[in-house]
Image (cartoon, rainbow, N blue to C red):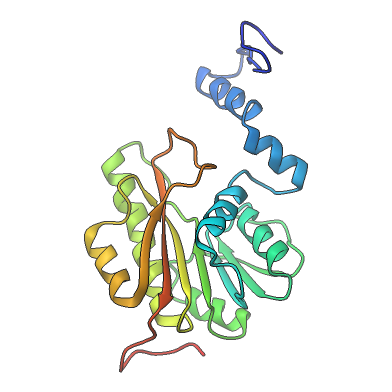
Length: 228
């Protein structure tokens, strides 16, 4: 229902059982071009376009044969990978249940579980050449705490990447405003040829999220294990 909005803009009237916050969220969803595009093109979430736009900028999907999707729910990123890489092996993991995606293996478990890395590699059938992570910790409303918790997930994902990636592989992860901290960036630069931060157009302007793209994995150093 429109009321007082500009041309083409949908205003949502506050219902008795709807909070002002949920009303604003619904209004934003109804007027979000990426939400409309996702529905039209069959993607489960607008987040699919974040990966698409990052790939358009950095070109990391081309040629990937084994892909791991960390924090995959509801599955938009895996859908993009399957569409662009129909012959690639794809394994995703999330605490939340995810509806099946043709050609992808889905694990409902905690990535922080000690058994998760081995399960991922076992299901993938070998070492990945691309690891993407849209993981973020559940927010508690305290920006510094939220950022630290999400950085903890990024650090764990990076460690997994360093332990398992094929030489030349890519690691893509969501971080918070300001990007990955200096120690984390330094670790990436030791292990990857290039490390860049980006905020794709599909990421809402008001969102604190950014993404880090580390390409050209240099390979494990002496004494480190390999998944292949």
